[in-house]
Image 1 (cartoon, protein in one colour):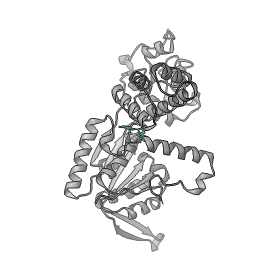
Image 2: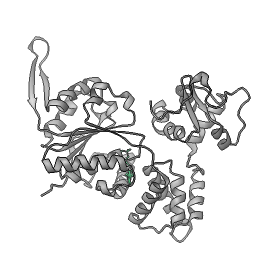
Image 3: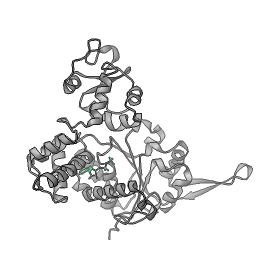
Image 4: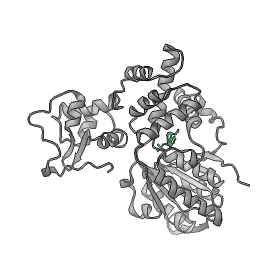
Length: 372
Ligand code: ADP
């Protein structure tokens, strides 16, 4: 009989859906996150076949999961990469459910030293899944500690210091590591190579997003017509998480301002009010475009300079803002920096500055590229 997965977050064993740890309950922020996580959980597909889109990735994973189940063998390690909100965590939580094995969840940012990883590795049951989110954030020492764990299911623990130091070799039960990253470029080649499957998640097509919006609306018990679902899909930056967030806002809006069911006009009014435009860009996206325009004359300009001017971390621009704008061809990346395209000038409703370089000149080898 398949066992239900036990979810453990950051070493604190608690069942999925269980109450958050008490000390967190004191802080408003933690409460907000908990509510958000609760909401997120309600909308998150539970099985891979409930997931919409990413068909090629789904087919490959379904085969691997099926084969692993039939042969009663541990599934090979899997690495997911792609911008935030596209389903990396969802795949990572659906796979163990489909396999009927336990799941542990760790965050790369919280694994500061090998000792932080040891409990996860020693607790891992045979065939279970260990999911490390933001795996590009683990320091080099943790990464090297992972190599023998992934390859031979053993770890080398050093006890004592200096001349008294001894190395203890410990065997682990075979497990599956699932890593997720927004930037494969930051992963070292030896770590990347230890993943048997590497899957890139791309932005979703409009029909897929509209389907996600309809399914989420049903789960949230709110009536929505097809045109409204299409409108929210168009304004969701190709990203399921954003589609769900926009839908929640539109639901609040229609509850307050109308009879509670969503039509296209109400969806448009709600999203306009939130500053989401017809391409789905929010204020931060437009600020990024207008910063490149003014003071940087349309570019090329380095991303650090744009981040400094906007007063936000460079990583936020690279991970969250740029991928969709590059994909939408509003901006291009060149060896000399970011540059606006004619489409961006048109969207901002401004003229291309006279001295701004034209579209993708040969000189700077302007090629749109999604990831670092
Ligand atoms: P990531 O880990 O890539 O940042 P998540 O897996 O957390 O993204 O996805 C964010 C939310 O988007 C999930 O809670 C889920 O509700 C929704 N979602 C993501 N991918 C899909 C999908 N393929 N089908 C339906 N909903 C999805």
